[in-house]
Length: 176
Image (cartoon, rainbow, N blue to C red; front, side):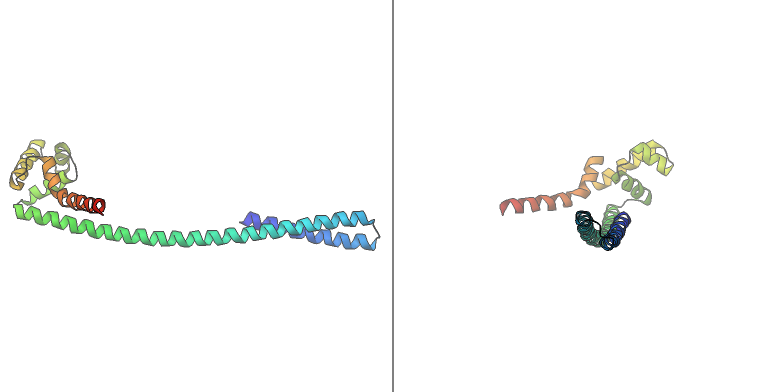
């Protein structure tokens, strides 16, 4: 935008100098064709200055509108982030509550959360600074208490309600 302002200012200066030159030419009784030529140049400079000024103002309004929309989008993202944090917290509490219902020990709860996060037994052992065999035994106990047959069924148990709700929405949309 500064470049546009500089160009407009230069065009205005050129126009002013040309006008002064035309006045001087008239006083010096320079031929009319020369004064007409310079007058056309002044007219073209005026047109170019008006065009660039109008375009600059239009772009300035667009930039302001975009900045406003960007600020609104940032607010929406902040709101969504807040909602996502709240939903994540609520979901974590629901999972922890289910772990309590199944009677998981604190150690089993830690392993179960890491299983749900998708870590391998080896990774869980490294995070918890235990042996992989210990993690496998804890996972087996977790699956037994949850009455599931393995990691995938255990993870799916927590997703089932979400998937059922989504499938129900799809069925309702197809029926409509």
